[in-house]
Image (cartoon, rainbow, N blue to C red; front, side):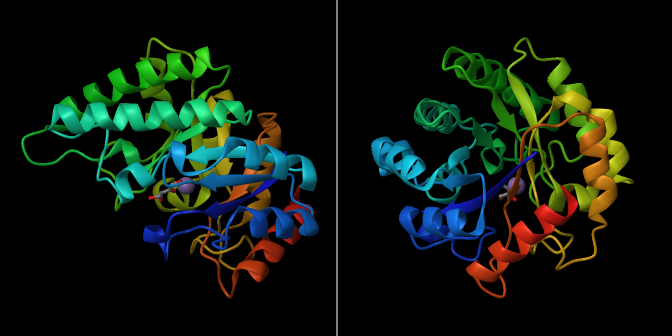
Length: 269
Ligand code: LER
Ligand code: MN
């Protein structure tokens, strides 16, 4: 398993669960000093940052890009994949495809988190899940054409009413025509939703492609009450080789949250 830490380049997401906020160079430098393997980037859009700049930072600081988030499409532009409005759904697809393209140039997958949206108004749950299925089929195959998987993240009940638990997400992904969508298991969301997080991880097995490494309160691992050892053992049991990426609230400050994360990572992994 490899360690990663998040940087947000989106000022409108202030207060959100990202560790670094002071630009790419600052994030790469601190992550490298602390001994992380990779950075996860939350950009405003695909064309809001220079791929060449990120590639140069990766080389200079000997870090990988773990993943690139698409949530700014929701935060800034109010786009999502299950909107009643076909134009919004199609703009959401475009926004995500552009991020898949640049993420692939950085050897990393894109994440569908809040861009999944939720069902409301005239859209039934069944209809929203059909929209989501069709979107993930298309985006998963597009990611495959770029040499990557696509990461789909079930969110807790306060953020979506579509899919919340790992088992229902595994069942949903099995119905897709594409085999290139993997689950992002965010330990914060799953701490809210699962009966037993370690068991849920073992059952999801190789459907898991990425992990957000967060404690019960969405602070750094060790600052809440999640029992992390059984979760790490479960990930070892399924031979998980991917990232544990800290998508957490930067408290008491970015540096301490990052330091606590890497110390917890080194202790348990
Ligand atoms: C995104 O990774 C996530 O976990 C969501 O809670 C963001 O809204
Ligand atoms: Mn997450």
